[in-house]
Image 1 (cartoon, protein in one colour):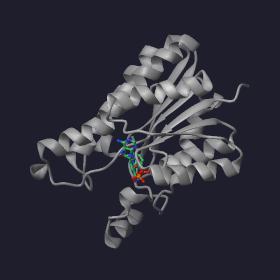
Image 2 (cartoon, helix red, strand yellow):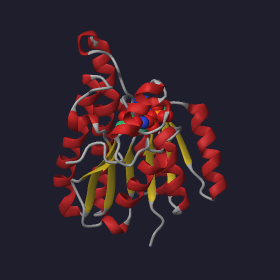
Image 3 (cartoon, helix red, strand yellow):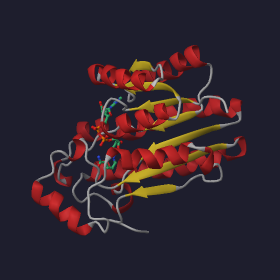
Length: 246
Ligand SMILES: NC(=O)c1ccc[n+]([C@@H]2O[C@H](COP(=O)([O-])OP(=O)(O)OC[C@H]3O[C@@H](n4cnc5c(N)ncnc54)[C@H](O)[C@@H]3O)[C@@H](O)[C@H]2O)c1
């Protein structure tokens, strides 16, 4: 099989880093995208050690012109896009009554608008190729609403889950699979502000008895990006240790 060309957004740390390293181990040609140039370069070096030569793109996915540049640069370098992982995002923890208009706008621009327009541009190319896989990173909060996280964050991730289904319907007849992963509580920068007491509370509530690792989430992405998931589309895969089951 041809080496898949894979774009991973938010790849400079956390879940995106783990996804990038996992795809590199599978031999993928990687396009690593992040707003944080320093950390991006560091992950680029890790990927090189595995044997893949990544293309690094410093970009803010909330900016339409950056989204266009990500796609253009990838095509100029690799001629095609086989896998897109929309992982870049951030979390808010503001009480509902305190969320300002500018905070709402910024969060929606990154978590939902960025995911939407990058998927839109990539889907056009994948349709021409008549093949491709898109994996969106949503969140448990997008299913159950915000508890430890803000209502704005939960709403953005609910949007990502629904967008996944629309994209899956659009891409199905072109053999394009679109799925999403819903992480629960994963040990990254996003959860680093949670108190010890909260973490202990989660551990008690999680049937598998532990907080997830970035690699736990990356493994789910790897599966959805693989041939083994060729007959799965529009699906939401929970990676939460059993914290929530539906
Ligand atoms: N950690 C968790 O418990 C958890 C749970 C559910 C969902 N998620 C989701 O997983 C994804 C990854 O989160 P993480 O925990 O690894 O967080 P993280 O903060 O460790 O990493 C996020 C990365 O995205 C990048 N990024 C943020 N905004 C960007 C932008 N506008 N353009 C380009 N890059 C941008 C950051 O620079 C960072 O490198 C996010 O979408 C998050 O909402 C995380």
